[in-house]
Length: 124
Image (cartoon, rainbow, N blue to C red; front, side, top):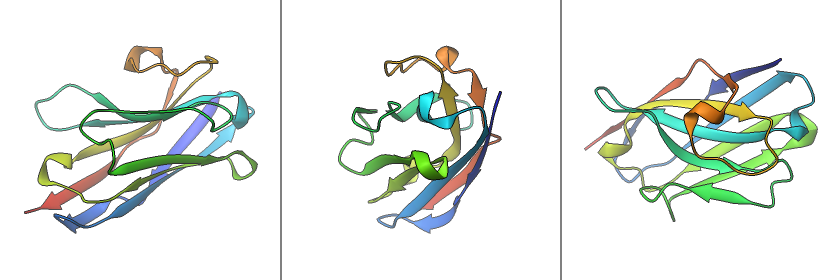
């Protein structure tokens, strides 16, 4: 079992930045591929970014490429999402997720563990 707790959400103006953090506890964090997903009202959950167990490989959704950066610190059981140049369309609940596969996967169904989510609101 892995428990995930997100923090760092909030209200920010367009063009601003936020940093989300996800603290993991339970089984060995370093073996898991981690992902950040988001879900806006009336929309399906979509992947934002993912990072493999080593931190050497990353994936970004097309809508956030060049603006968001995912990173992890296995020694601290943490994964972060730095969000820059935020847009109103980035408004959503952001979720941290973990799966035990060795390769990055983008489908939400492949993730075994989820945090409770943190709200990000970007005003225009």
